[in-house]
Image 1 (cartoon, rainbow, N blue to C red):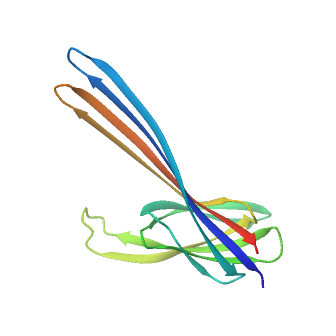
Image 2: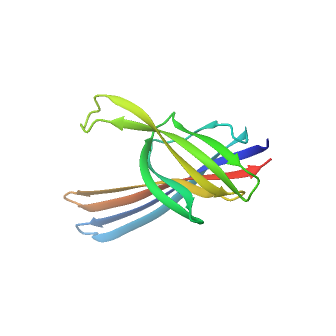
Image 3: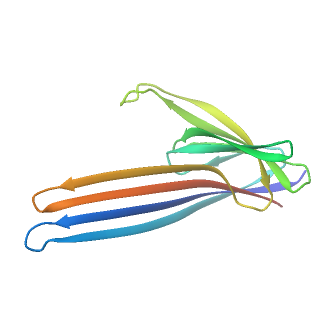
Length: 175
């Protein structure tokens, strides 16, 4: 039995653009762009083949990537789950001594009704198994959210757009 260090990080980047047109005596166009990024990392030391619980910091729909080996090639498929604050996933690493580690991820998925106001909430578990190289950061989930707004009035108009991208990355190392 070997100890394995599982590191999980959330990498978030925000891109926004703001354009305004001012009318009247001082008419002009104003344009602002900004880019922000941040990373949150957590670590867990676990015995080979044992599960560990890891939490995420935001409520976000995540495209969960699942990879497996078929005929000697790694094949990746995509599914979507909603990870809410206070939830996350459990990870069970299995290493057989090679250069790859098999990592089973089990995420909680929030199920909501189609109404604007959620009447009932339930949850179900979604799991996937990935073949990851040791000592390398690998993206296991991602999310993108876009927003646009515009305002106009007597003195001018303003448009604002933004995009937030979040990636969940995992790295497994031997200890």
